Length: 97
Image (cartoon, rainbow, N blue to C red):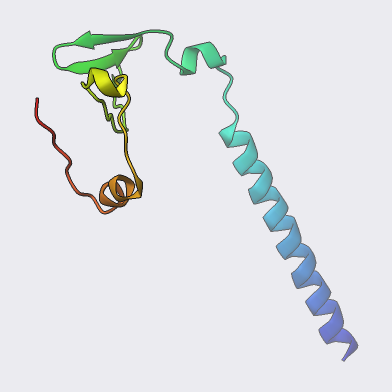
């Protein structure tokens, strides 16, 4: 019985030691020596039909744009919950140009 407890304690100790070493190596591998200015783009330009940053990487913008061309509305699109439900469901919304 005493030998089993010692064996279990050894297993727990080495498991803890292994987890600690692996965790520390993961943290060290995630650290970058580069300053933030070198990682984030400082400018975005257009090359052909693509947006690119100052390092030549393609930038992909995500989002939606809803506009009103009605002067009576003050160029602010008036919407209700049904618009957002349609957007959430993936519906395509088009208006007269």
